Image: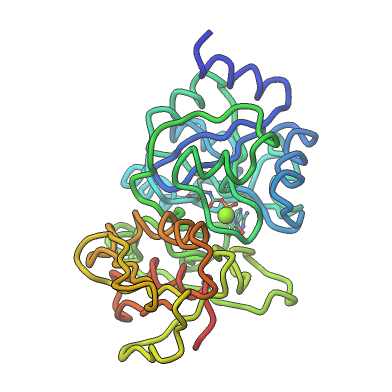
Length: 320
Ligand code: TXA
Ligand code: MG
């Protein structure tokens, strides 16, 4: 039996399948089974108030799970699916309430990865899948990250290599009257969306973790490494960094250096937003694996092309 067939059997039996997407690895379960979906929340230690994204294999199937499909949804789906854009729409009852944390809306997306699409076609049903990490930790971008973090809690891990995009999808709300609203910046930039449907609002914001979240990716500490992590804008206040610290800076290529054991590690990140995003979570995991006591992140410029990377860095760090 192929790995995909085995994964389909596991989904049908109410089990958990980790699978690659172009953004990050997902932890999937049958979105029509409350019991299966509850296993996702248990494996991640995720609060039941944070809704999951539902993955499907094409636009026609996505439409079946939404009670309204505005012109904007059609245009965006045609432009960006399969791809890193999640559309929030009013949901049909077949998506169980556990998936959407009781909300009347569902986040739908068609992922752009051959293994994910193969799985979704073979399963022939909606798959609820958050990122396959423990709640509030860094999302996995390789199968090994999933294994290290969730281990036996997952029944099957499909290995599709490293994720191309490296950060999560853009979550766009189309469920209300008025302008579409970006709940979470991500793989599709605001400007790309606006080129297709005109102006959008950005309601992504950081809220403190004890405030209830309207869209829960907004929790302040999210996507964070284990080591305390701080952000700063140039110039670097590096007297603060002890020898067992690491400094994350934009350079030209992805590489880790340390001049002498008495100096902090220097994690050089690529100089372009897409390449930076591609390596970001792996870099944070690598520094955690080194056991550094702190991570200092030099923030990339506050310009539109860096918006999604900056969002993740802000959630992963505190101001210095
Ligand atoms: O790229 C991605 O989106 C990955 C891959 C696996 O598809 N998934 C992912 O899932 O990042 P997760 O659960 O880590 O993040 C889902 C985000 C959360 O911020 C959640 O609050 C928001 O989407 N979301 C999901 N359904 C929603 C809804 N009905 N209304 C508002 N926000 C929603
Ligand atoms: Mg996540």
